[in-house]
Image (cartoon, rainbow, N blue to C red; front, side, top):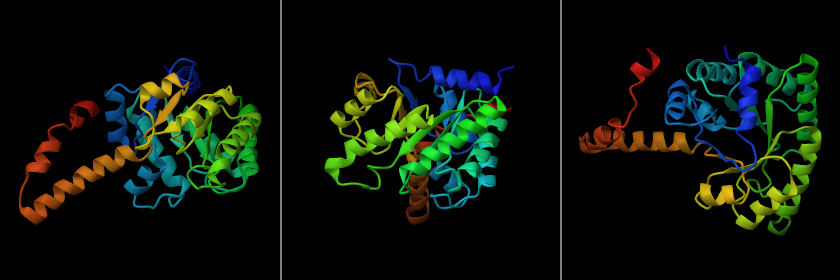
Length: 269
């Protein structure tokens, strides 16, 4: 039987130098199984997509209990390692964040994303330290991916963004982070510089401006996340099909996309 510790070891190996881990993010059991069966080596959740699928806005609009329950459903149907987007940890108290991460360890999660958002970077560093301390006390492990939102929230002027995210990457690495997520950083030169500035695996988020997977791998990036784009694509296709049905009385769009739906009855039987 594969244990949570085994999953963490597998997940760490997927971040080895020379590799790039591509993560099409999931949000529920069906999407997670779809991602796994398509060949993904791990499944990542998207906090935004999980929140929307449960009727909440992104940005810690859902409770930790809802997030845990959604994660358990994902874990129930896949065999590959699962990494969870835990936003800012659902608390500004590092000890409470650590408690939440320990709960994820208990249910079998292999990795976790935790972000600084608009809060001071020292707070995320404190959260990472608390997580690592709690893990050590329990003899447990989980891959902690520290996400910095310098580019997303324009926390400093453009000319200072590279220096700032490099500074934060060093701070989070010293706190014990296992990976650095430079969200919304798309400039190829900046990506190469951040990769060169840290020994930790660098994670990039897919956007229209993001270099393709081959270019990212060549730059030394070891992880690519799709974020909520998988869910947006699914919901966008559904919205288009439903509007065509209701406004034009036509089924074309529904049948066109339904034909590609996996056989979930077979997958879950």
